[in-house]
Length: 143
Image 1 (cartoon, one colour):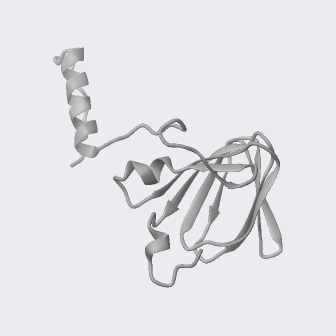
Image 2: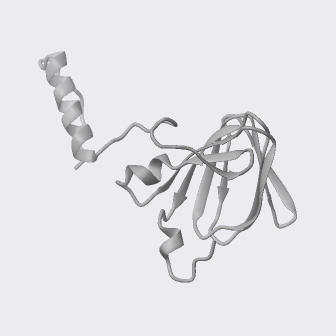
């Protein structure tokens, strides 16, 4: 349930904090960091941690990504929609003979069914979100 309006100046700061905490608990708001779950290496130099997927409270999947060296993950056909947000560095997505490059503060949207190659430079860090999180359990999903 969403309540709109302004905080009453009659309430104390402590009362407002308790009310805000109650809303956060009811909506299951979670802070995600790259320290929440372990990193796994997808290919040498390209690591992921699935912070959203492991939080388990949504139909979204995703987490953090980092390139410890220049690396590439080639010829992957997505079975989900994905958004990649670059925090630092540079990420390139090769698809259909073209290339899309995102730098710090930019994002790339990749629709379900697209065949891509992920290419990152050493030091690139980003965040990815995908839907549905259980794409690999859907019938006909291949990986």
